[in-house]
Amino acid sequence: VVLVVDFGAQYAQLIARRVREARVYSEIVPSTMPVAEMLARKPAAIILSGGPSSVYEEGAPRLDRAIFEAGVPVFGMCYGFQLMAQTLGGTVDNSGAREYGRTDLHVSKTGSTLFEGTPAEQAVWMSHGDACSAAPEGFTVTASTDVVPVAAFENDEKKLYGVQHHPEVMHSTYGQQVLEHFLYRGAGIEPTWTTGNVIEEQVAAIREQVGDKRAICGLSGGVDSAVAAALVQKAIGSQLTCVYVDHGLMRKGETEQVEKDFVAATGVSLKVVDAQERFLAALAGVSDPEEKRKIIGREFIRVFEQAEAEIIAEAGAHGDQPVKFLVQGTLYPDVVESGGGSGTANIKSHHNVGGLPEDLEFELIEPLRKLFKDEVRMVGQELGLPAEIVHRQPFPGPGLGIRIVGEVTRERLDLLREADAIAREELTAAGLDREIWQCPVVLLADVRSVGVQGDGRTYGHPIVLRPVSSEDAMTADWTRMPYDVLAKISTRITNEVADVNRVVLDVTSKPPGTIEWE
Ligand code: XMP
Image 1: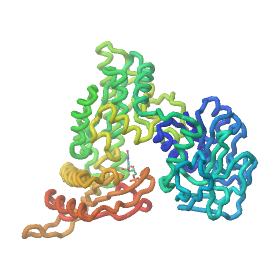
Image 2 (image 1 turned 180 degrees about the vertical axis):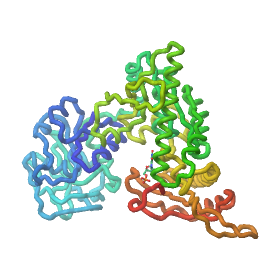
Image 3 (image 1 turned 30 degrees about the horizontal axis):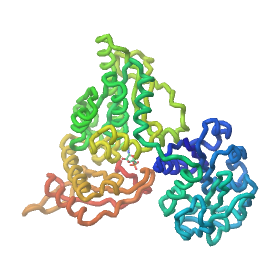
Image 4 (image 1 turned 120 degrees about the horizontal axis):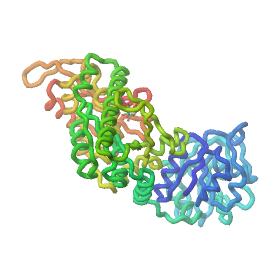
């Protein structure tokens, strides 16, 4: 394993992803972890991330010098670079030599381990206030910029390397190469990690964890729960039962994909609960977004728990082993953000419906908790899941219920489903699925405007297109998509969807607008 020491500000996650893209397994550890503990994990290499602090600040994160003396290759980036410089006796000062954004890097040493085969002048992405003016003894300076004399250094003998810039961001043109040079040349690691190994490992681990007991998994139609279920199915087969709550708020064809294609691809035993009427009844007369979300969440839990109770009762009636496990599609970013728990947590299921003991406890199976989203998709692909599921864009749990501005009714859901299907079809046909993070299609059900169609006046609803580009949904920008694709979507929706006579484009970034309208 390569350990990425996290000094804050989200750089560590990106670094860990890049290391895995180089086919080397990596994990993130907090900078507060004692160095002895890091070394006890026998890392093949250690990477020190950037962070928001200055090495000068009182209370800025530090590292025990022992980390550089254990014979483990270390690569410091940005803050990690400065910390390495300072700890080993170099000079870091806040001389006002700050650089932010795109910067020209002058590589001064040909044959450097990190920069081998990359140009003498290259664009890198910088973000720093302090700067290193003298490298520690025994180090060779390998690059500089117009304002920073020491922008990279290395000590090949001790296997210690550092760069002032951020090789992990895509604006650093040769960043991935520099990182790979460290991993392969500096640290001598073989690039052998693949998601294929993950499947084997997880299948073995799940078998061991579950034994002859039974497990339940809720399917949402999204990538994560589908891949988690498929992995567990591969491990324990018929000991797993999946539950799919059809709340009637899915997009066109999605429920069928789960009911037919997913089942066909995995052979999973699936219990589908048709709760459409129940959700519609609960949502009747409600227009407030928060209230809609609460109702959908509440109903979902009730329906799911009832299904759970039935599965447990059925197992009991058949004299099967008890249902002890709940499968969840938790991903690595959630684990890192919630402090990286040990993975043994038990959750209590709160039962609002009768028939279950109050304190029933499930143990969790979380086969994706070491994976990033793109890796989950790769695993899904290797497991043979349908492309429509593996490459599905994010879709909110409350579904189309929060894409109808106004009251949710069956007619409105049908109308929105048609419009959404047209938009998705055309975006796919135009090859824009990868470029666009997601494209909510929203029905303004309480708005009408005047139009003309054929020879008659119409008084219909507008549909909003909300295509956004994003890395993580925390921030987003509206996608500058080709006019002809927009035109085609607009023409088709107004022609093919009854009661819609206008299509509008949302050109708001996030912030200030959220991605969804409700
Ligand atoms: P917003 O609208 O907050 O959305 O910018 C950010 C991302 O989260 C998705 N989203 C949800 N996902 N349950 C979910 O599973 C929800 O209640 C929910 N609300 C928003 C949204 O589609 C976007 O990707």
